[in-house]
Image 1 (cartoon, rainbow, N blue to C red):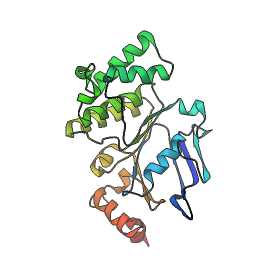
Image 2 (cartoon, rainbow, N blue to C red):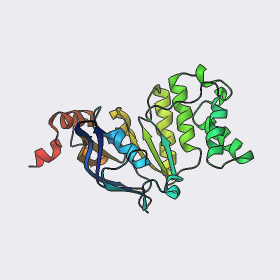
Image 3 (cartoon, helix red, strand yellow):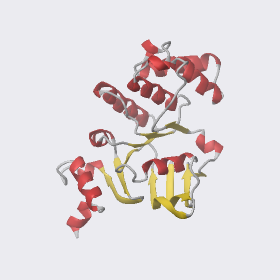
Image 4 (cartoon, rainbow, N blue to C red):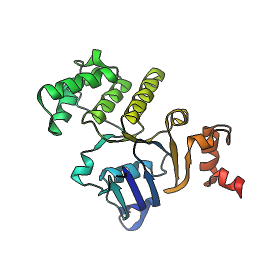
Length: 251
């Protein structure tokens, strides 16, 4: 089964008495099992719209998305996804433990199984000592860790994360990289957007670059090493010109 398959995806936002805004334009790609794939692009490139499409939150204007060979939005497919939105908000009057318990109960978990899973995840993301602290007293980085634990709570086979390291300090980013690599070793596929190019370079097997709604590059990180001075320079040159500089060099 293919975790993500996107074919000729178009997403438009309608506007009254004006031409629709096309956020995603004829986008096609796929992500294989146990891959870590970084989804890159400048602000407004179409990353979040694509991720909303993958989650079934945004209607598709045309094209198709399949998750584990099932149509996007299928209940069975969605049960295999762990999702971290770009801006995760949790009740300020709940603690991290209570927040995860709520999400677990909504997904049919209960009792000792749920409690043990919550305790293990809070330990894994590094906030077990804040398990009983109100969310409103936590920093942005700590809330991001709560969000990462929430995404992992139901033992997903696919992680979709929008700006997954937002708000994390360097230690938190390192811990997150280690956590994602452990997930991959367990057969989990990770698809995430990020503006942190160094994070993408150190973690990903492959990168997809989107620009003005179109896919303009698809490269493995290993093939970029030795061919570009840095992935950051490569990315900046690409979004400034709108084309893959390695393709231009070959031409």
